[in-house]
Image 1 (cartoon, rainbow, N blue to C red):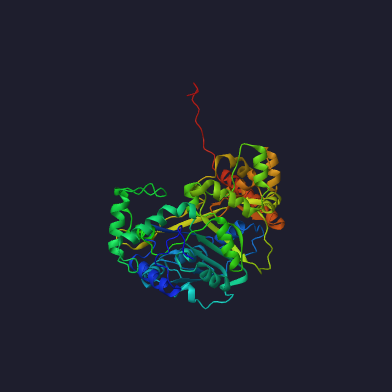
Image 2 (cartoon, rainbow, N blue to C red):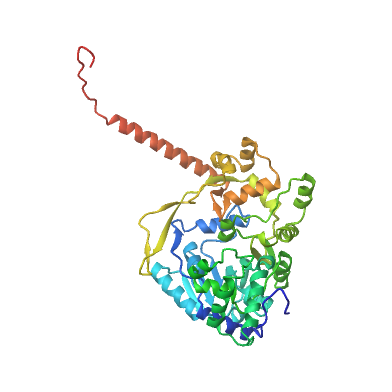
Length: 464
C-alpha cells in the first residue's frame, strides 16, 4: 500500500521493481570497495560472539560450520561474512551482475574459498529450510511488497535458525525519502528513470537544501563521496521504512519472532548502541524497565525519534524449537556466568594504490580499543572462576537491569568482544592453563638466572 512516508511512486509489481533495482545497482554497485578487509585468525571467534549476542552463554545456538545466506549481498557483504565465518558455507545472492562481479574478484584476491555468489532475486529464491543463519540488511525495504520478500527469507530459514534483518528507521529516514520523491517529480517522467540526470540534479539540490538526517552533506563532501553512496541515499527508486512496532508486525506476518537488537558497527560509531533508555526519575525508570522487551524498544523508538538505533534485529521462526528469552533473563544468566578475557589476533588485506589488496605484514591484538572506562574494574577482576555477579559485588556495582545490560552489551557482544563465557569444566581448564603459563614463566626466569656466570670484581683499596 502506497503511503506518504514511503517512496513508492515507481513501485509496481515485484518483477518490475526487481528490474529497477537490478538496473540501479548495476549502474551504482553498492557499497564501494573498502580500504581494507579485516579478519581474525581464530576461525571460531565470530560464531562464539554471535551466540553471545543471542544470550547463548553455552555457545550452542549456531556452530562454526553452519550454512549462511547473505540475501542481497551487494559488492562485499558476502565476502566479509565469509571472512568472519571461515568454516561456514556462505551463499551470497544479488540482482546486480556488476556487484557480484566485483564481489567475485575481491574474493579471489583475498583467497576466500567458502563463498558461492549467485545472480538471483530473493523474490524467486527456491530455498526451503536450508540455512542456519540468514543475513539481509538494507534490502527488503527496496521491494514492492516487503512482506512477500520476507516470506521467502522465512521459508529459507531452518526451524532452529537465526535471521539478521535490517530495515530503515522511519523516523530517521523521512527526510531522505521525501528528497527521493521530490527528485522523481522533478524528473518529469515518474514512470521512467534517467539515473545519471537524477543524480546530477540531486547533487545540486543537496548542496543547497540540507538533509536533516545527513548534516555532513555539503558541497565539499558531495564532491568527495562515491557516486554509489549518494545515489543510494538520494535517488533510490523504491523505499519503505518502519518503526519497531511495524517491523515486529511485518516479521510476525512472515512466521518470524523478533529476538534482540543486533549491535552493529554503525550504531557503535554513532554511539547509539543501546535500545534501553535511562531516566533520572526512579519511578519512571521502574515503569519503563517493567515493560516487555518489544514495548520498551517501541517507547525508545518513539521518544528518540531519528536518534534511536537502526532497526537492525535478530529474528527466529515462530515454530522454532528454542523459546525466546527476554533481556532480563539474559541479564540474570549473564550474572550467573563465568568469563575469561578474549585473546584474538586480527589481520588485514589492505588496498594498494593499484586497487589490489595485499595482506598486512603483522598481526594486531583484537579488540583494538579499550572498553568503556566505567567497566575497567569489572574487566580486571574477570578470572574464569568468579561469576559476573560475584565480580559486580566485589566492585560494589549495582545489579539493576540497566547496569547489568549495559555491562553485557559493552563487554560480551560482537561490537565489544572483550569477554568469552566459559562453562564449569572449561573455567577450570582455563585457570589451570593460566597457572601453567605462570609456572613456565617462573621456571624460565629461574633457568635464565642459573645460567648467568659470576664475574670477578676487582676492588681497589679506596673502594673505587
